[in-house]
Length: 265
Image (cartoon, rainbow, N blue to C red; front, side, top):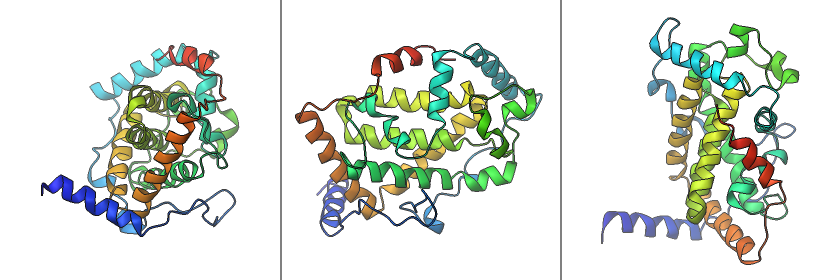
C-alpha cells in the first residue's frame, strides 16, 4: 500500500472514533480553546526571520506598500478592511461566505462555525512568541496616521510582526480550500485579501502580513495531525455540500464585496 494512501486510511479510521463538538465551553466571554495545546503549537520564532530593519531594502518595500495602500483611505476597500478587522463571532463567520458561496453560521453550519472559531485561536496563539520577541511598532505608530479601526487603536500593542489577522485568514483559506476544492480560487483570493486588509488598515506592514501567512500555513499543517480537527473537517465538508445541494447562497452583498476587493493596494 502506498504511504499516502495508508495515511489517509489511518486518518479516516481515526475520525470514526472522534465526535467533534459543535459547542465548546468558553473560559471567558467569547473565548474558547483551540485544537492545539502547549507544545503542539509550532514555535514560529524558530522559523521566521527578524522583521525588516529600518534602512533596509525590505523596510523600503514596506514603506512603499504602505504609501500605495494609503490611497484607499475612506474607500469601500477601507470599509471592508475595517470589517475584516473584527475577529469576533458571529461577525467573523461571514468573511468567507461569498468566496465559499454558502451561508455560514452557528445554526446553519455548526461544524464549520466551530472549525473557524477554534482554528482562529490556534492561528493567533502561534504568533505570540514571535510578536513578544520582536515587539515591532505598527505602521500607524510610526506615521501617526489613523487606522480603519480608531476605537481599537488604544488596545493595540507594538506587536506588529507577524500579523495575527493574516495568520488567521490564511489558515481559514487553506482549510476551506481543502473542504471545497471547486471554490479554491475565490477562497484563496479572499484569504490573501484578508491579510492585505491589515496593510490597508495601517495596522500592519506588508512583511508582517507575509510572515503571518507562513504562520497560518504551519498551523494548518500541524492541525492535520489532530484527530478532532480532522473529524470536524469531515463534518464541515458535509455541511458545505448539503448547502450547495440545497441551493443555499451567501446572504452577504457579494457584488459589493467583489467591487471593494478589486481595489487592492
